[in-house]
Length: 182
Image 1 (cartoon, helix red, strand yellow):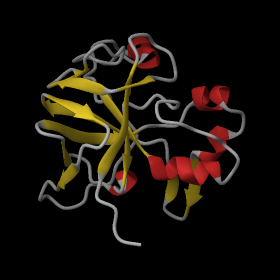
Image 2 (cartoon, rainbow, N blue to C red):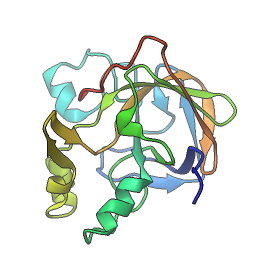
Image 3 (cartoon, rainbow, N blue to C red):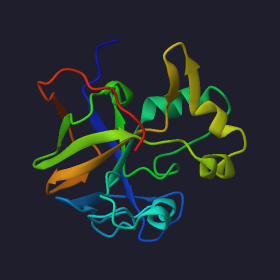
């Protein structure tokens, strides 16, 4: 089997603060804001738990990406997870999201550009969604915890993103900066 070219499998959004998002045909993203019509779009933090701490902190979680390879792994453990179920805006295939460097640029489709900010921290909502799932989203390694719940990013350039769009990874040129939770 050959190498799979990095691509978008599905896109999703939700105008309210629910855990899962609805898969849609396309999403429009806006620089500095996020997905049009999504509850997490904004220059300042929109995640309710973080708003409660400091509503003026910058929104480093405008776009949430998860790799569909995680869904494949979870399916093998008895969990049937579909795109949008874990609250992601973009489901990918063929890209090691968790291995990317902070500030990596992701060029998607014709004009969209995202800048990777960090890891999504698996939270209690995942356990509420499916009992036992939270334990599958965190793995212990000699280097510390591996958080598998995807990555977060901010929008650098406007664009429309659809399933099937190619993803081109652009390294920062500053060496690898490991992702931390944001």
